[in-house]
Amino acid sequence: MNNRINITINNHVATVKLNRPEKMNALDEPMFHAIIEAGESIRTNPSLRCVVLVGEGKAFCAGMDTTNFSAKAGTGIFANPLMKRTHGVANIFQKVAWIWRELPVPVIAAVHGAAIGGGLAIMSGADIKFVTPDTKLAIMEFKYGLIPDMAGSQLWRHSVRDDIIRELTYTHRIFSGEDAVRYGFATHLSTTPYEDALKLAEEIASKNPTAVSKAKNLFNQAPYLNEADGLLLESEEQSAVIGKKNQMEAVMAVVEKRAARFD
Image 1 (cartoon, helix red, strand yellow):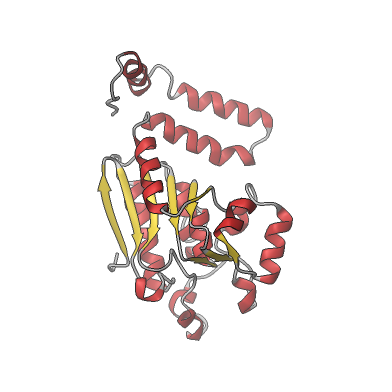
Image 2 (cartoon, rainbow, N blue to C red; image 1 turned 180 degrees about the vertical axis):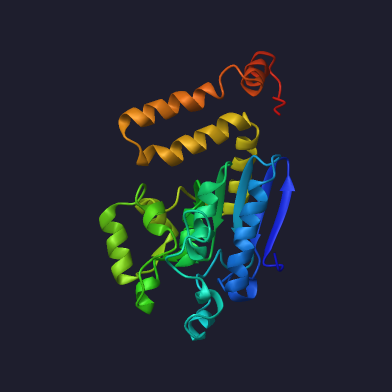
Protein backbone atom coordinates (compact mmCIF):
# COMPACT_ATOMS: atom_id res chain seq x y z
CA MET A 1 0.00 0.00 0.00
CA ASN A 2 2.99 2.27 -0.68
CA ASN A 3 3.27 3.05 3.06
CA ARG A 4 0.23 5.33 2.64
CA ILE A 5 -1.94 3.07 4.80
CA ASN A 6 -1.01 1.23 7.98
CA ILE A 7 -3.17 -1.66 9.16
CA THR A 8 -2.88 -3.22 12.61
CA ILE A 9 -5.07 -6.08 13.79
CA ASN A 10 -5.84 -7.02 17.37
CA ASN A 11 -8.71 -9.07 18.83
CA HIS A 12 -10.56 -9.22 15.50
CA VAL A 13 -10.41 -5.40 15.11
CA ALA A 14 -8.45 -3.75 12.29
CA THR A 15 -7.18 -0.20 12.71
CA VAL A 16 -6.74 1.36 9.28
CA LYS A 17 -4.62 4.50 9.48
CA LEU A 18 -4.25 7.01 6.66
CA ASN A 19 -0.52 7.67 6.74
CA ARG A 20 0.46 10.79 4.85
CA PRO A 21 0.69 13.19 7.78
CA GLU A 22 3.01 15.67 6.07
CA LYS A 23 0.13 16.41 3.65
CA MET A 24 -2.69 16.04 6.20
CA ASN A 25 -3.47 12.72 4.48
CA ALA A 26 -4.51 14.51 1.28
CA LEU A 27 -5.57 12.29 -1.61
CA ASP A 28 -3.10 11.86 -4.43
CA GLU A 29 -3.11 8.92 -6.85
CA PRO A 30 -1.09 6.54 -4.60
CA MET A 31 -3.41 7.35 -1.70
CA PHE A 32 -6.50 6.47 -3.75
CA HIS A 33 -5.03 3.11 -4.67
CA ALA A 34 -3.78 2.41 -1.14
CA ILE A 35 -7.16 3.11 0.47
CA ILE A 36 -8.96 0.81 -1.94
CA GLU A 37 -6.33 -1.90 -1.51
CA ALA A 38 -6.70 -1.63 2.28
CA GLY A 39 -10.46 -2.07 2.05
CA GLU A 40 -10.14 -5.06 -0.24
CA SER A 41 -7.61 -6.73 2.07
CA ILE A 42 -10.08 -6.38 4.94
CA ARG A 43 -12.93 -7.76 2.85
CA THR A 44 -10.97 -10.97 2.26
CA ASN A 45 -9.88 -11.44 5.89
CA PRO A 46 -12.50 -13.67 7.57
CA SER A 47 -11.05 -13.12 11.06
CA LEU A 48 -11.99 -9.42 11.17
CA ARG A 49 -15.18 -8.29 12.89
CA CYS A 50 -14.84 -4.50 13.01
CA VAL A 51 -12.70 -1.70 11.54
CA VAL A 52 -11.51 1.61 12.98
CA LEU A 53 -10.62 4.22 10.35
CA VAL A 54 -8.30 7.03 11.51
CA GLY A 55 -5.82 9.57 10.16
CA GLU A 56 -2.18 9.96 11.25
CA GLY A 57 -0.94 13.39 12.29
CA LYS A 58 -2.91 16.62 12.54
CA ALA A 59 -5.93 15.65 10.43
CA PHE A 60 -8.16 12.80 9.34
CA CYS A 61 -8.01 13.80 5.67
CA ALA A 62 -7.75 17.26 4.09
CA GLY A 63 -9.33 16.09 0.85
CA MET A 64 -7.92 16.11 -2.66
CA ASP A 65 -4.24 16.95 -3.02
CA THR A 66 -4.33 20.19 -5.01
CA THR A 67 -1.27 19.12 -6.99
CA ASN A 68 -3.69 16.79 -8.80
CA PHE A 69 -5.25 19.84 -10.43
CA SER A 70 -2.00 20.83 -12.11
CA ALA A 71 -1.89 17.56 -14.04
CA LYS A 72 -2.84 17.63 -17.69
CA ALA A 73 -6.36 16.51 -18.49
CA GLY A 74 -6.52 12.77 -18.95
CA THR A 75 -3.28 12.07 -17.07
CA GLY A 76 -2.50 10.82 -13.56
CA ILE A 77 -5.53 10.11 -11.40
CA PHE A 78 -7.72 11.89 -13.95
CA ALA A 79 -6.89 9.27 -16.57
CA ASN A 80 -9.59 7.23 -14.84
CA PRO A 81 -12.88 7.84 -16.69
CA LEU A 82 -15.69 9.17 -14.51
CA MET A 83 -18.50 7.36 -16.30
CA LYS A 84 -16.90 3.93 -16.47
CA ARG A 85 -17.68 1.71 -13.47
CA THR A 86 -14.14 0.54 -12.78
CA HIS A 87 -14.78 -0.60 -9.19
CA GLY A 88 -18.09 -2.44 -8.99
CA VAL A 89 -20.88 0.17 -8.86
CA ALA A 90 -18.33 2.99 -8.51
CA ASN A 91 -15.42 4.73 -10.18
CA ILE A 92 -12.08 5.12 -8.39
CA PHE A 93 -13.02 8.48 -6.83
CA GLN A 94 -16.23 7.09 -5.34
CA LYS A 95 -14.69 3.80 -4.28
CA VAL A 96 -12.43 5.28 -1.57
CA ALA A 97 -15.59 6.22 0.35
CA TRP A 98 -18.02 3.55 -0.84
CA ILE A 99 -15.73 0.60 -0.02
CA TRP A 100 -16.27 1.15 3.71
CA ARG A 101 -20.04 0.88 3.21
CA GLU A 102 -19.54 -2.32 1.18
CA LEU A 103 -17.46 -4.16 3.78
CA PRO A 104 -19.33 -6.97 5.57
CA VAL A 105 -18.16 -5.67 8.96
CA PRO A 106 -18.90 -2.34 10.69
CA VAL A 107 -16.51 0.55 10.16
CA ILE A 108 -16.04 3.25 12.80
CA ALA A 109 -14.35 6.51 11.82
CA ALA A 110 -12.27 8.45 14.38
CA VAL A 111 -12.04 11.98 13.00
CA HIS A 112 -9.95 14.95 14.10
CA GLY A 113 -8.38 18.06 12.63
CA ALA A 114 -10.01 18.18 9.22
CA ALA A 115 -12.29 16.13 7.01
CA ILE A 116 -12.59 18.25 3.88
CA GLY A 117 -14.06 17.29 0.50
CA GLY A 118 -12.91 13.74 -0.16
CA GLY A 119 -12.01 13.40 3.51
CA LEU A 120 -15.62 14.05 4.46
CA ALA A 121 -16.74 11.50 1.88
CA ILE A 122 -14.38 8.82 3.24
CA MET A 123 -15.54 9.51 6.79
CA SER A 124 -19.14 9.26 5.59
CA GLY A 125 -18.59 5.72 4.33
CA ALA A 126 -18.22 4.53 7.91
CA ASP A 127 -21.15 3.10 9.86
CA ILE A 128 -20.42 5.22 12.95
CA LYS A 129 -18.34 8.39 13.32
CA PHE A 130 -16.63 9.90 16.36
CA VAL A 131 -15.45 13.47 15.77
CA THR A 132 -13.70 16.09 17.88
CA PRO A 133 -15.71 19.29 18.46
CA ASP A 134 -13.12 21.46 16.71
CA THR A 135 -12.73 19.33 13.58
CA LYS A 136 -13.14 21.37 10.38
CA LEU A 137 -15.38 19.74 7.78
CA ALA A 138 -16.64 20.90 4.39
CA ILE A 139 -18.23 19.84 1.13
CA MET A 140 -15.48 21.69 -0.69
CA GLU A 141 -15.94 20.83 -4.35
CA PHE A 142 -17.82 24.03 -5.32
CA LYS A 143 -14.74 26.06 -4.40
CA TYR A 144 -13.03 24.54 -7.43
CA GLY A 145 -16.08 24.76 -9.69
CA LEU A 146 -17.01 21.09 -9.19
CA ILE A 147 -19.87 19.14 -7.65
CA PRO A 148 -19.43 16.51 -4.91
CA ASP A 149 -18.79 13.24 -6.75
CA MET A 150 -17.15 10.88 -4.25
CA ALA A 151 -20.33 9.02 -3.20
CA GLY A 152 -21.49 11.76 -0.83
CA SER A 153 -24.89 12.13 -2.50
CA GLN A 154 -25.65 8.50 -1.63
CA LEU A 155 -24.01 8.46 1.81
CA TRP A 156 -25.47 11.69 3.19
CA ARG A 157 -29.05 11.54 1.96
CA HIS A 158 -30.21 9.09 4.60
CA SER A 159 -28.81 10.94 7.62
CA VAL A 160 -28.50 14.65 6.71
CA ARG A 161 -31.38 16.99 5.91
CA ASP A 162 -31.65 17.81 2.21
CA ASP A 163 -31.56 21.57 2.72
CA ILE A 164 -28.42 21.30 4.87
CA ILE A 165 -26.66 19.28 2.16
CA ARG A 166 -27.63 21.84 -0.45
CA GLU A 167 -26.52 24.85 1.59
CA LEU A 168 -23.17 23.30 2.48
CA THR A 169 -22.61 22.26 -1.14
CA TYR A 170 -23.53 25.60 -2.70
CA THR A 171 -21.41 27.63 -0.25
CA HIS A 172 -18.59 25.13 0.60
CA ARG A 173 -18.88 26.55 4.14
CA ILE A 174 -16.56 25.03 6.73
CA PHE A 175 -18.47 23.58 9.68
CA SER A 176 -17.36 22.14 13.02
CA GLY A 177 -17.48 18.72 14.59
CA GLU A 178 -20.30 19.98 16.79
CA ASP A 179 -22.20 21.02 13.67
CA ALA A 180 -21.44 17.64 12.06
CA VAL A 181 -23.22 15.78 14.86
CA ARG A 182 -26.11 18.23 14.85
CA TYR A 183 -26.49 18.00 11.06
CA GLY A 184 -26.20 14.20 10.95
CA PHE A 185 -22.78 13.77 9.32
CA ALA A 186 -21.29 12.34 12.54
CA THR A 187 -22.55 10.20 15.41
CA HIS A 188 -20.73 11.30 18.56
CA LEU A 189 -18.57 14.17 19.76
CA SER A 190 -15.37 13.04 21.45
CA THR A 191 -12.13 14.58 22.64
CA THR A 192 -10.53 11.12 22.23
CA PRO A 193 -12.15 9.80 19.05
CA TYR A 194 -9.70 6.99 18.36
CA GLU A 195 -9.89 5.60 21.88
CA ASP A 196 -13.68 5.80 21.87
CA ALA A 197 -13.90 4.25 18.41
CA LEU A 198 -11.60 1.39 19.42
CA LYS A 199 -13.60 0.72 22.59
CA LEU A 200 -16.82 0.50 20.61
CA ALA A 201 -15.16 -1.67 17.95
CA GLU A 202 -14.01 -4.13 20.60
CA GLU A 203 -17.53 -4.29 21.99
CA ILE A 204 -18.99 -4.98 18.54
CA ALA A 205 -16.30 -7.60 17.90
CA SER A 206 -17.50 -9.49 20.98
CA LYS A 207 -20.96 -10.04 19.43
CA ASN A 208 -22.14 -12.77 17.08
CA PRO A 209 -20.19 -11.86 13.89
CA THR A 210 -22.79 -13.48 11.66
CA ALA A 211 -25.55 -11.34 13.15
CA VAL A 212 -23.40 -8.20 12.90
CA SER A 213 -22.69 -8.80 9.20
CA LYS A 214 -26.32 -9.60 8.40
CA ALA A 215 -27.50 -6.52 10.30
CA LYS A 216 -25.12 -4.29 8.35
CA ASN A 217 -26.38 -5.70 5.06
CA LEU A 218 -29.97 -5.16 6.21
CA PHE A 219 -29.37 -1.53 7.14
CA ASN A 220 -27.42 -0.89 3.93
CA GLN A 221 -30.27 -2.11 1.77
CA ALA A 222 -33.32 -1.01 3.78
CA PRO A 223 -33.46 2.64 2.53
CA TYR A 224 -33.64 1.48 -1.08
CA LEU A 225 -36.39 -1.17 -0.66
CA ASN A 226 -40.15 -0.94 -0.64
CA GLU A 227 -41.99 -2.18 2.45
CA ALA A 228 -42.60 -5.71 1.20
CA ASP A 229 -39.02 -6.26 0.08
CA GLY A 230 -37.66 -4.70 3.27
CA LEU A 231 -39.72 -7.00 5.48
CA LEU A 232 -38.74 -9.99 3.38
CA LEU A 233 -35.05 -9.10 3.68
CA GLU A 234 -35.41 -9.00 7.49
CA SER A 235 -36.76 -12.54 7.39
CA GLU A 236 -34.10 -13.75 4.98
CA GLU A 237 -31.25 -12.40 7.06
CA GLN A 238 -32.71 -13.70 10.31
CA SER A 239 -33.13 -17.14 8.75
CA ALA A 240 -29.39 -17.14 8.06
CA VAL A 241 -28.69 -16.39 11.76
CA ILE A 242 -31.29 -18.05 13.96
CA GLY A 243 -30.49 -21.51 15.25
CA LYS A 244 -27.01 -21.50 13.75
CA LYS A 245 -23.84 -22.28 15.71
CA ASN A 246 -22.86 -18.69 16.48
CA GLN A 247 -26.37 -17.73 17.55
CA MET A 248 -26.59 -20.71 19.89
CA GLU A 249 -23.17 -19.84 21.28
CA ALA A 250 -24.46 -16.33 22.05
CA VAL A 251 -27.33 -17.83 24.02
CA MET A 252 -25.08 -20.23 25.93
CA ALA A 253 -22.66 -17.43 26.79
CA VAL A 254 -25.53 -15.50 28.38
CA VAL A 255 -26.83 -18.54 30.27
CA GLU A 256 -23.37 -19.57 31.49
CA LYS A 257 -22.29 -15.97 32.21
CA ARG A 258 -19.09 -16.15 30.18
CA ALA A 259 -17.51 -14.60 27.13
CA ALA A 260 -18.77 -16.04 23.87
CA ARG A 261 -16.48 -18.06 21.60
CA PHE A 262 -17.64 -17.45 18.06
CA ASP A 263 -16.46 -18.93 14.80
